[in-house]
Length: 286
Image (cartoon, rainbow, N blue to C red):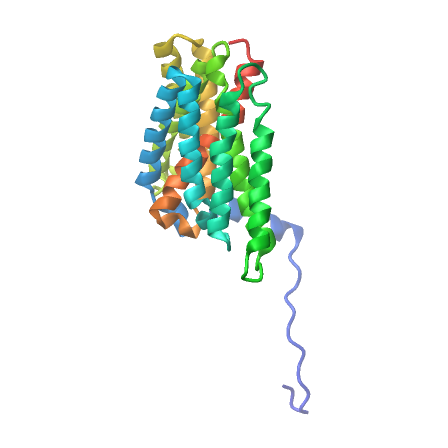
């Protein structure tokens, strides 16, 4: 306040120059702001990823029906913790809808006796979406955060549906080898997650997961003999890198401290690879 009683206008900071903005952005790139959760290793996620990937790899080598059963169990794990992990306001109904997709999608692929094997999967997805919307109609809490609830549930249904793309692979030429390489590569890439507590290692975790995935896929191709070595390494590298990215996105969410959220993260990191493996098996000369 000035001497004559007038209130002085607050000082306004001058706008940043282009050079100042560039310097600020470069400083953030050099030292990014990380959530504290991003620096905490989650051994349960890594162990669950390894175990689930090993089981699914064995199922892929046995029979497509066994693989469908494994994918259904993975869908149930996802449904158990997905709404809580993403903070859905209506968790029970969302879990039911995701579980419907998680079980029906691989089952619909398994019952098809000839190509295209995924032709019944849209029916399973439609049933899951009907359950999702019916649940919202039956809510008695005023439906707060409706869009968020629908988005979380729809994303979970989508992840389960993507995982169903694995099911036909054992019934196609060299598809079983692709599925095994994908699962082995994704599971082995989870070892890289354990280095997140070391600042010097963090910039190298994604490349490390890619290399570990390539090693896993290459090993699966050499042991199985159903896939060329370079194709196994390529599938493993792609799936290892993508699985790592999915896990890192989910590991910074606050509910990740719960055991079921960590199991859900491991399941999601494997299910999202279905389209990747199916695309490689379809397009590359394996």
